Picture 1 (cartoon, rainbow, N blue to C red):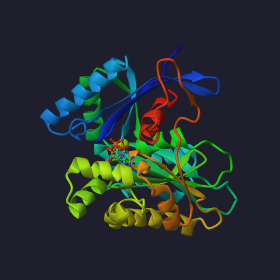
Picture 2: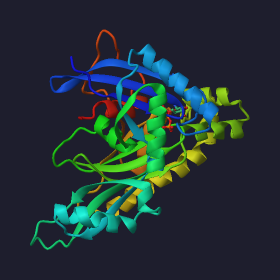
Picture 3: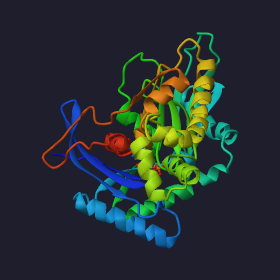
Length: 342
Ligand SMILES: Nc1ncnc2c1ncn2[C@@H]1O[C@H](COP(=O)(O)OP(=O)(O)OP(=O)(O)O)[C@@H](O)[C@H]1O
Ligand SMILES: [Mg+2]
């Protein structure tokens, strides 16, 4: 059976790998694995920590029998510039020649330092009265790309595909329903939170914040005077549950949770104010921190909108070699990468 690209997600908390094969309209899980990132380091950090991440990744690939694979990688949203450009209505070829000039106004670094990619979000029909088209621009610093390719090389895998993280997350957890209302994806990992609005398979905007699960654990170490490991355990066991430990953990987490959710709310309101005819219908959560006990209902109340956990495995069946993990949200990025058509 032909294997697809292996999805390899190098998170700052853990490294995840997923291999799928096509099965009917869905997929079969061929291999899956997760390993702690030995020091919360990313490719490109100092040499010693990078060496340890490479070792951990190589071991994970060997344990899952995926050494030497052709792989799909993601660049984290904080590393790339994602902008929606408004421009006059142009044909494809006009756009291709205008894109660099237009991009210069949106990207804060010299264009020769980035790789540029773009996708048309909307283009009014000629004569329909609309005079602006919207184009999603993604610019990835060449340095970041190079570092990732080097890192993959050291792990013995070949980078065949590279995309931004939320494109992969979207592929994994948003099922295409023609005409469906826009959905907001909120992906909360260990060190960052990414917010995107998606509609009919397209990202309409993306916003990234440097805060995630590690910051939540830290707020417990500060507020309750706990060691990091114990704070991590309290966070996972009690989270936002008001009935646990007299709500002490919840109270300690709330200031940061509220500040973080304000960012989500602002993005929601910003999008909705420009799209009153078709506002965002619901929020889908992914990333390991989505498992914070009580978060789904807390967030639904905070935002006044339906919130659900994303399921990256809804179209994937297990195989004798690979079972569906309990913690599916943490694998959203790796699954989306593995689903990529090449
Ligand atoms: N049950 C849980 N409750 C609360 N938080 C959890 C739970 N399980 C995992 N987490 C948190 O999820 C985070 C890890 O999530 P994930 O695997 O998505 O991160 P990552 O991809 O390694 O990091 P990043 O993408 O931010 O570099 C950790 O901060 C961890 O504390
Ligand atoms: Mg991650």
